[in-house]
Structure formats: C-alpha cells, structure tokens
Length: 287
Image 1: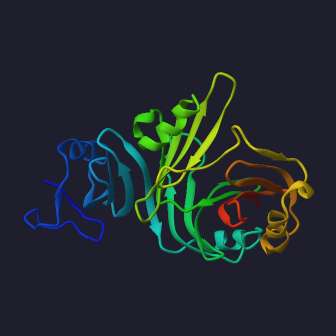
Image 2: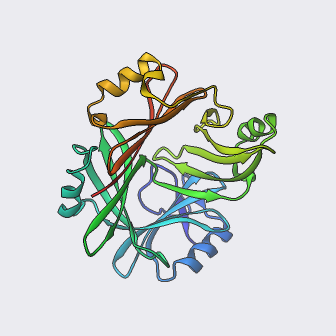
C-alpha cells in the first residue's frame, strides 16, 4: 500500500510509524491508473482529505503531480535544478532581467500546441513562476511571469471554494461560472473566480483565507490616464526601475489598485494595496 508523508517528510516511510497517513484507496487507484510504471513514489498531503502531491519517476525521468480523489489536477516533468543557457540569455533581454532562475520543469506531454516550460524566478526578492513557449523559424520565446505557485488548477464548481468566498458571491447575487485555485509552497490556496450577475460578470480575486482582494466588477474608480492615479501609485510607477519605459494603459480601484503598463512587446499587470504597496506582479513579453 502507498503511504503519504506529512509536509516535513522527504521520503515514504513505514506505515507503522505514527507520523504517516494512509492514502485513500481511491487516490491510490487514481495514481496507479494515471501513472503506470511510476517508481520511487512519494506522496504528500497538500490539503487534508482533499488534495495530494506526488513525486515519482518513470523511465529514469522525474515527475511531479497534484491530484484530488477524482482527477489529476496538474503534472510536470522535473527536468533539472538549472535552466538552459539559452533561456538565461533570453531572460536577460527582458524588462524583468536580473533575477535568479531555478527548478526547470516542463508540461511536455500536452496533446496539442507547443510544450510549456516553467521555472521558479526570484525577482526583486519575491518568487514567481516564469513560463515560456518556444516557436521556430525564426526562434521566438513567449514569456509569462506570475506570482509563485507550485501548481494551479481549474475548477468548474463552487463546491471547491471556501465558505466565505461563497458568502461574498451570494451577498452580491453573483453566480459562480468557473475559477482557478493556486497553491504555494506553504500549501496555502488562493482563489481566482469568474462570477456574474444578470447584468455583467468579472474575475474576483481572494487570498488564502478567502478574503476579497480585487475585482473590476463594481469598481469604485476607473483610470484612463496616468495623471489620474493617486500620487502614491504614480510614485510607485516612477520609482520602480523595471517599469521604466512602459506607458500607462488602464487602471481601476476596488479595495486595491489594479493597472496595466505596456511597451512594444512587453506588458505588466500590477496590483497594489490601498497604501500603494505591491500585492501582485504579472509580466508578459516576447523575444
């Protein structure tokens, strides 16, 4: 029988030991069905009785997967701790250059489209996921950087949301449509939900405690020009070196400031709290 380590554990332990929790039979069956031939398997709890993660090998290649009791939520090939020199060179040409890349992995078995590559990117003392695809003739790298999560997954039902997120939606007579859950290294879950009323819909962002962070829906202020932003937000943009050369595109305020900055082949989507402190940074760029 497969056994699951607790979070501090690095290897599967004897099931007689007190700090080991037996994996539900349904999860074992799902893992064995989805990953035949897996060896050197370690499975750990992410969210008790709900989500697990697995480290395993197949044909001398290392993999990571996240799963609940019904489906595989995410899976990657763990290629190496280091990222190829070609990627290091490409990143050095981006506005977000200067960070440190590690944890090179790949969604290499997509049924369609280009393989998707990922790395952890330490930028301005904050961890992000930098992902990219590579097209040929000529070679082109398409990059995206988002706040760090070891995995994320789509949800089609509100049953996977915390009770206070449901209460928030119900209080505004909003109907859940779909969403995404992101899981960080501390196994904290964050929620991005698309919900709608009879008139309109939008994305709603909630933190690991299910507290509301931001949405364009029912925004209190919309901004079309940089000069319209409050002085602390303008000061943040002016004093942040990696934003130099980008032009203001649009913005809004609803509990937090959300705005988009553009250059010819790159863009930022930035979220600041009410005191103009950085909450979230997203980047897109093409080389």
